[in-house]
Length: 198
Image (cartoon, rainbow, N blue to C red):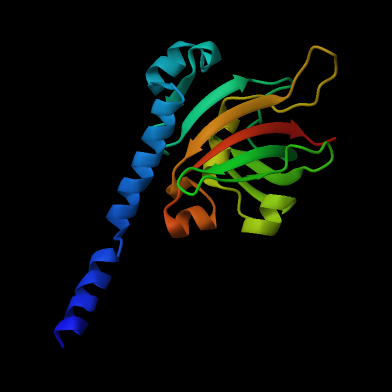
């Protein structure tokens, strides 16, 4: 009986609570920020800088409402999504699970791209995947964290040699992530490009 009680005690000690997992998530995010020498700025500073982040200074803005950290590397060509607009966007991505250190991407082949249908109403964005690796792996729902930059960047298609599509980097907590992030309380790092479909 004593051995059984000890085994049960050890099993209980190994059980991770949601609070434990959130602490691990916070530690993983903080480790990435420290190890990469990222400089976190406030939304107020972000607004004062013209809704930009200084890539040379490795700035990421912490978005208070979502908990997402965002760096806008390029605002992109074209124009922002307009109120009442719906369109298809082509997205290339690199995804890194910050706790498991696993990589997932579609950004190494020119025609390997995810497609998402997005609608903007006021400042609210909603989107679903219709094809691609994210769709086949996680389902149709676009992670809420992916939508954060779309109020600050342009989405167009290059019309000249000096034009480029929007590119952002994100640190996305589980609450703003896909189904696996939410289920296991995993934070993810992303590098994303957004391009309007023809």
